[in-house]
Length: 400
Image (cartoon, rainbow, N blue to C red; front, side, top):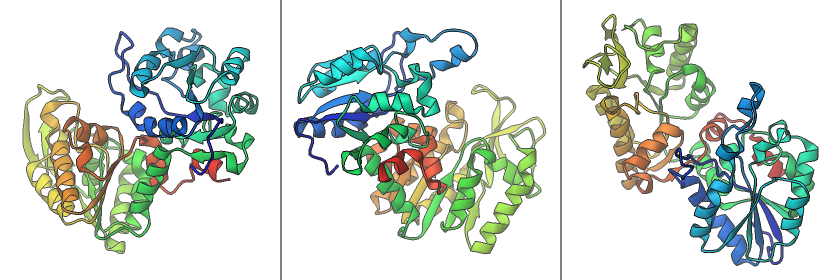
């Protein structure tokens, strides 16, 4: 951030889309914690901070003919906690743009912080509306985007607003910068061997990512529900396991592409299978190619864990995106936890590791391993698209 913030009002796009309980108390403040270094830096340098963010999907009910639930989705819920974290009073404006927002922004003194109301209370936000973005831009002297988690969305507050600031008056925050730098460490000239661990339910969700990874990784480990599409495509019997029938041909193409590129593709040799999609279901371990009729694979088995672990321990660069099983069910979370431990151990022995994607991030956080891996990404969809090689609108808007 090569900007002189002295006496400047910094309009900062943060990602305060935090989970709340039924009493609107924050249950995980990771996203707020990640934004603090940028906010503190600007305040320490004599600037003031105007924070804008979305929270949830307030327009969903509106589209169904209902009304916006302002009580549920107001950003006022984060103000008290943010005040505690910053050690200073944080002001709140109950509108995002308008006369009140403009007046409060103009009166802001160096060292003060103002949180604007949920950007998604305005229909212009998701449309990338220029008029709405221009009103936002008028609130600040400089623009900082520190919301990597929304960088893949061409919304008014993440992308359009940047066009109203000269190149010298806009910048990435520390979080955005770190996300980009760490992703680039894996994508460009990584230490080898490079091992990617990809999980999750569907091949279709990760198709572009898998294609891209095969171009530059040495080992590709596939777990989670998506593995059974590959196993079936290779002629295996998968019982009632999740399979995308329309992706079998694609799975075989990816296997052939991996062979032609000299990439070692690992599918789980064995699986923990269950007779129902339920944590209390009867379960056992079988070969992934011989899942009995009426049973479904819900986790990778012990042999798969051992093979995956060996590839992880030999890696110098590791990318992990997606769980190895139904991580939210304790009986089928062992594979994901095992992988988390292996990634952490390999990192401690000198590998660089990047963890991105909801359940893989949840696994390292729940196990207290977040500080044992090199970098934990805050952006699920954004990181996925960045790794796929797409140009993210939120990044392009700052670079242009």
